[in-house]
Length: 125
Image 1: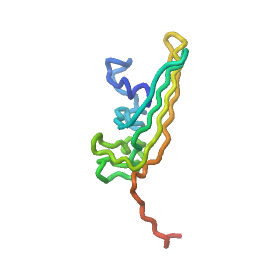
Image 2: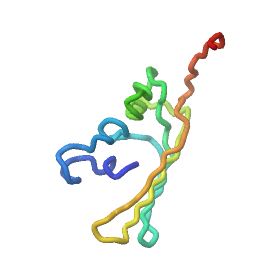
Image 3: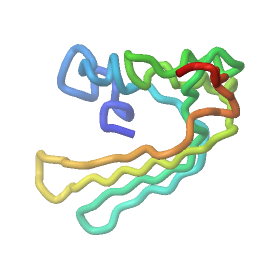
Image 4: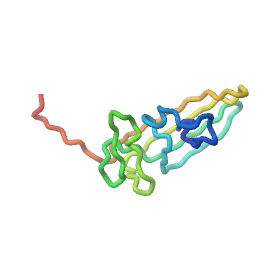
């Protein structure tokens, strides 16, 4: 979804380590199965995908750990073991009109329950 996800090796970005946000909060290496479109219109490059959603709960066949206070990283599913009960949309737009500068934005929207039901205790206050 982000710039570091596509080019996350030190040979393609200026630094010897991945940025802390991408190491701990947002998954830098994020593999998803899905379909996408990409292209460029004028000075704007775009990408859009429909993918299997994250697994917020985890502990299932997807081998995901689920979301935690550490961020979204645990919701990543493991390739061929991914559960696709819920899908998500991902979009990204970058402005390429200024040499040496590439501002952009991205969004991820979708459900992440993957068919799991979290039990609730109706006796709680």
